[in-house]
Image (cartoon, rainbow, N blue to C red; front, side, top):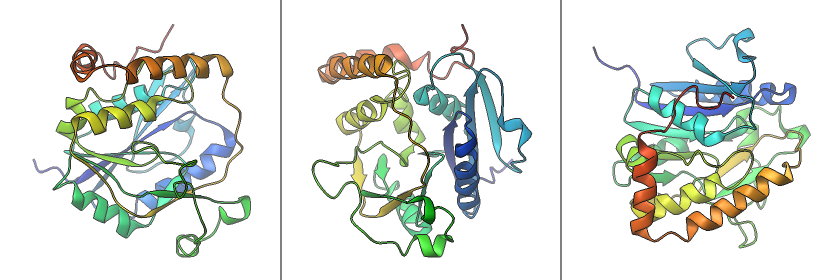
Length: 253
């Protein structure tokens, strides 16, 4: 049987009322690509997304009493993907489809591609613009100064499936906000043939709640410890995690 999908988009999600509007917007945008397999991995104490109709989209629910673990959501999605081209996305990021497609094409040459190098944060008034109007917005964005450097694996990032598996998927030791994308970038640059193309990504506005300081501090300490590993020790860390990635019931108490 021939797989109708050319590439997979994986989005991790934890429900909030202001987030669902952005998620629907992102899914509208994503559904415009031909041959896309869309997987949403929802983490929560009980499923919330099953009350919404997302036709043609795979919805995977994992029960969790813990703060959101984006890495675990991504790894679960990876295990359920059916294509050899994996895009990890977010429920509030949209980019020009032509740039997305050129990024996917670059995966013929590279194992990992970041399809943009700057992010424009939209205002509340800009969130409901048409995509054509949104893509006309052109002002300095994150990534255009050293202070606002964008990490390679933050936001939308593309991998060949064999490459993301080779580096052990995403590190599930990061719980709550922060650190996991920095470590993923470090691992990707250490072991993979990677490329960052020029382009713009648009971040849909939403209320920003400050990260819980305790898990954030823990994540920073973990990040510093992992960044200090030699390539040999990093390989051992990856080998130890490969068997356990994306275990569906892992987050339950």
